Each structure stands twice: as structure tokens, then as C-alpha cells.
Length: 226
Image (cartoon, rainbow, N blue to C red; front, side, top):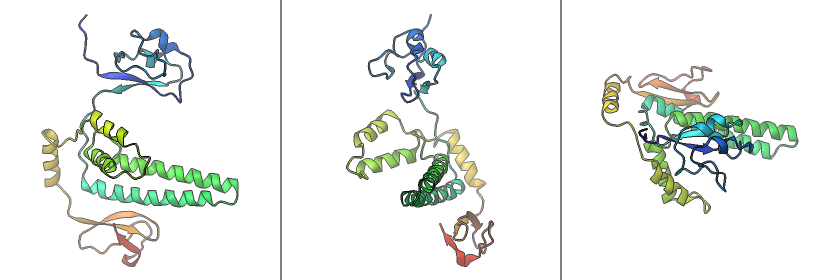
């Protein structure tokens, strides 16, 4: 039988593993039987037998290659990043309120709100391409953190290793470049992005038009440029 090139490897989430050990019986190479519970990537052939057998869903298959990062239009990026920044500020406020709460219930509510806000921010950043490991902006962020670590305990070596292991793979050539050119040709007229100081809404207004919040109707005096 002709050997095929390995495209995936199995990875185990140790927090989900319940030690049922069915993976040990079905793995054809013994890759799942290790002292540190981490599946051996060299022995693993990516067959998926262990993932199928695991009753706790602790094993999944990770791809060894990533598709190109989708091209992100500025009309998507600008408001998404603005909203992500706003969510980050909201999370900080919620955490501060939780820490200063006078009773346990209020503290738990503040912590839950902070967590929910972070999840929304992560979705916005994911849509902007900052949470995709192969994207150029994710690589730029890692390189900036390596050059100027935000704290003394920042794992510089781990960040450098990620930059080595995951190639930058933005879709900026070939068909993707053609798509970008077509998108630019059909691009909408220039807009300005505002944030409403009354309700927090972020919205775009065509260049030259008087801005009015589409949510609460606030006028220009209550809006700020993003």
C-alpha cells in the first residue's frame, strides 16, 4: 500500500482527558502512549483513530498547513477594530466593578459581564484576522511583542517559536490579488467612522454628510471620530 503524505496530527486537550485510555488501544503507532500525555507528533500518522475512540472528546486532529488568510476590506476592518477597542475598555470597567463589589453576587455578575465582553471582542478580532495564526497582522503583532515585551515574564521564546512554526500565509497573490483589485474597483465611496458617546454605537457616514447616530439619533456634538 502506497504511503500518503501526513496532513494532520492528533492533539490531546489535557483538561478534557478523563484517562479512559481507549486511544492507547487503537493507535497503530503508539503515538498516544507517552509519559507526559502529549501525543508524539513524530509517531502520529494523522489517521484519526484515537480521536474517534476518545469518549471525552479530548483528542482532535490539527492541520499541518493553513489556508491563506482571507483579504479583509477596510470597510470591515475599521469598525470591527473600533468596536474591539470599545469592548476592551468595557471589559476593564467590568473587572474593576467586580473587584470593588460589596457582595458576592455583584462580583460574580461583574466577572461574568467581563467574560462575555471579552468573547465578543475576540470574535471581532478574529473577524479582523488578528486571531488567525497564519495572517500577516498576527505575525506583525508577535514580532512587535518579541521586540518589545509587554512584561518581564512575557514568553519571548515561545512567540519566536510560533513565528518559526507557522508561516505567514496571507492571500495577496494570484486569484486573491485579482479579487482585491476587483474589490477596489467596486469599492464604495469614502466614509468616516464615528462612535456615539450616548449609546456607544459605531457607524460609518459617507464623506461630506452630517453624521447622526442611527441607533439613538444623537447629533454631531455627541459623536467622536474613530
